[in-house]
Image (cartoon, rainbow, N blue to C red):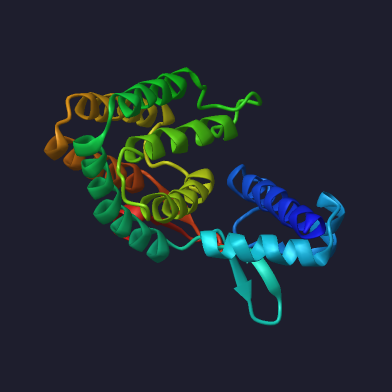
Length: 234
């Protein structure tokens, strides 16, 4: 039992580590994930790696490739358009349920998550336009908005959608200047919090749907071939 539990714990840790490497941009879209390289990096067996990668396939950010093993998912304008369509259908509904059912504890968690998001720099220390820390707190903020919903399937489904979206965000240039996008995003985040605290379910649902679509429309998807396509037009 102890040995099985230890192997499970190692798989948990390796899953989290590879997931972070993907979402933080250390592993690129379409990049092959080989057992020798990952084994040397994480110091675990092929069995542990296989279990970790299988979990990441379930989470949507790794895919299996026939006769080649595993790779990070590639970017596709069509895939991103379909992802956005699903998110605009599902996440606003969960947010609506959160607003209707959310407790005072949930309200305080929303305020705290928003405060942390406001205080976390978008730019990394090296001056690039991406900060892994910002990406994490941004995801946490949106998941907190939905966490007042009591539907037991909410977290797994939306967490997968947000992970894939975060990967696209990491690698997709913006159509507008970054400062303009950040300013609009900050105003929209504030409006989402206000609607949540006012328990205005109709407005909350509408605002989140518009926020998801607007953020998607700002991205330009760069595929493995180097082709750039506006996400706004698939």
